Length: 242
Image (cartoon, rainbow, N blue to C red; front, top):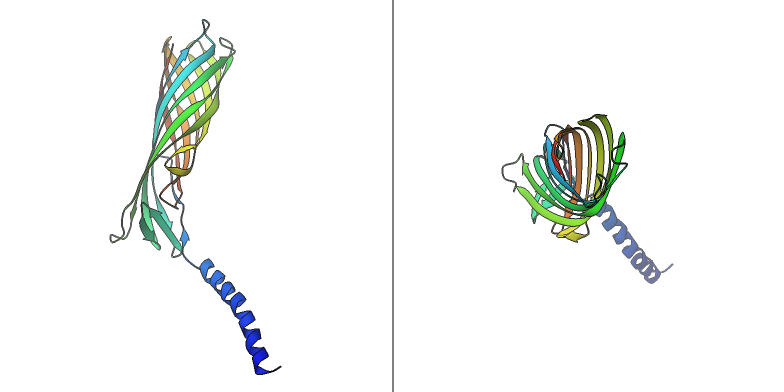
């Protein structure tokens, strides 16, 4: 093989070799971190009102609900991690103090089945709006504070099961789920689960107390970092039923 052939072979190998080297270096770079907070210490509160549209105790109705959940916790960023919100970035290694608040309001069609029986069932479907407030403070004082406030809307649906224990007391379990279809976010999702005792001191008033879990995922439109909030703790609800 002459010198000219050797040079041509080297050129043919140069491009694949360069691509392989670039791919390897990219794999060793800094990754984007999912910011997350999980908190079991804060109470979750909500208010809910239902207006039955028929003449009987069951059947169709309109429901409006609003809730609020907060979560606080710490998160460790390794040397290969980076978190970015609103064009502000924190590089690892660092420890972040995360503070989140999730608020939601929904308007749904509610249908009550088996009214007046020992076991009742409600299903509901409609629309919701969810707002997530986020703040991350680094252990390094020279790092910027990461903040985000994102709002999205989308369909929501779920069901509630009720077991009557006494004339004014019942045990309830309820689940709802929603996904983002609009708003200044790339993606969003919310799941809410509650188990509570419901006490009716008056025909139109329901006081609920129990345990609930709120899970929210959102990726703000201006950020490549996903936010995950899990709040779980005592649950309180004020209900009005007409």
